[in-house]
Image (cartoon, rainbow, N blue to C red; front, side, top):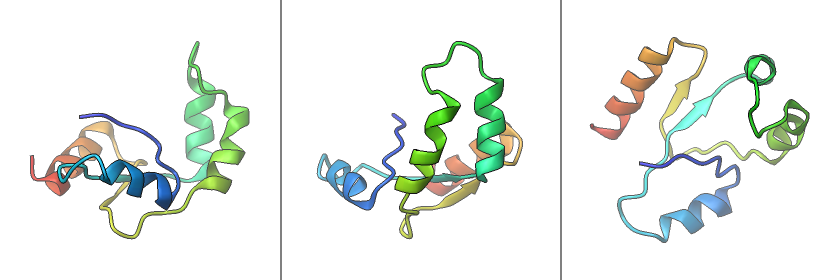
Length: 86
């Protein structure tokens, strides 16, 4: 299992070309929540200043299960596993 942003539909389509077992889950969160989490990280490669461009580039998927990241991590994991049937 790997994770990536794949913000645009075209990126996800390109990844799907890798094989039939490629699946996506949309981890959805508000700008404010994600910014707060980014700002609380220490020594992480992604700078909060880049968040604006990420939200501008985002094309929300209509063909992937959506999981609200405001939930506790255990609930997020459970929903992802359920959505993927694992």
